[in-house]
Amino acid sequence: MLILVGCKSPKKDYDFTFFKRNIHEAYYLKFNSSDTLYCVDASRIKLETSFAILNKEQKERIQNVLDTITFPKNDTFEDIVFNDGETNAFVLKNGKESKKLKIYGISGPKQFWHFGETLDRIKLNLQFFKINKKINLREINKMVISEVKFVPRRKDSLK
Image 1 (cartoon, helix red, strand yellow):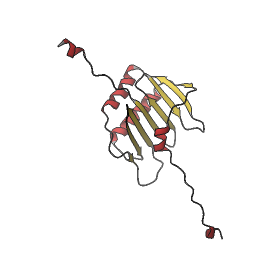
Image 2: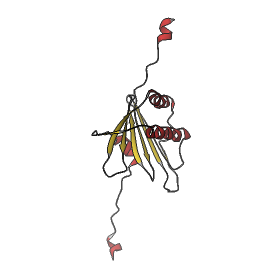
Image 3: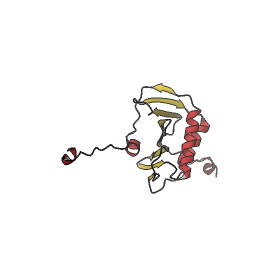
Image 4: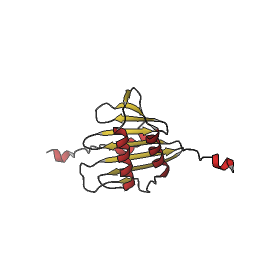
């Protein structure tokens, strides 16, 4: 009986990346189940990386959401009408399993919009320190950076 009471299920180690872009800002947050939160400012030409230390409550808030949030089968929700809305993207890796979601405008599951707001509030309440570290954003960038394709002009249209 004593053994069962003293046992806790082990915490999952996550590799989580969040991206937010709107007319005012663009940034990535990287969380890997430690007390460090990395922020990559993407609003400038050159990406700037900084870090902050999460307090116990902030870390547990993020960890608890990651433990309970359910990713939908569809990994992209976008408004049909193009507007200057907000884009949030989430990539969660747990071991070899990877889950993704991109939401834009007012589309997508409300729980993810709320989670994005929570992450934004946590970010605003932290003091970040710049560091010279590259964060791997390859997987989330596949979702949020559109590839620009140029269509060659037809020769007969140049006349």
